[in-house]
Image 1 (cartoon, rainbow, N blue to C red):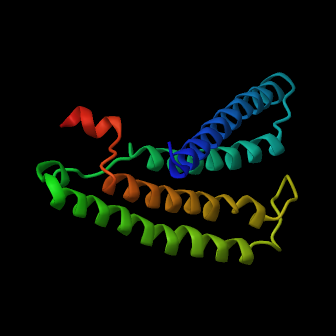
Image 2 (image 1 turned 120 degrees about the horizontal axis):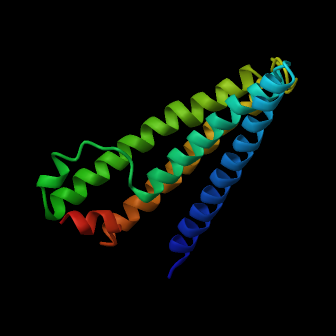
Length: 167
């Protein structure tokens, strides 16, 4: 197993654990919110805000994880009907297109959004919105790294289980 495989496994491990921890926190916070709202008649605005932001974080981290597994939704009607070198080229082009979009929208745009919103505070938590938005460029960078790893795996003829089952 080489360095790139170790890197992929490390990122997979961190993302899967982070998603599980965030989900567990969301369950606890959601239960707290239900108790405060229905039993005490005082809804907690802090818990509502935490749920909103933690759901966003979990969704973006999970999407990066899914891109790394190459299990994301895709329109494979062209790539699945092509074989050999042409398929590799097509899948590489798709990965590159994703990487370009992620670099422009999530990494650059997310970093710009972070900078613009560092002076704005969240309503209940009182932390800068830029801190909340850090997940956008972070998840974008993860998708970008996964894109590089996916391209390398494609050209090393190392395909994931999902691809092997379909063919």
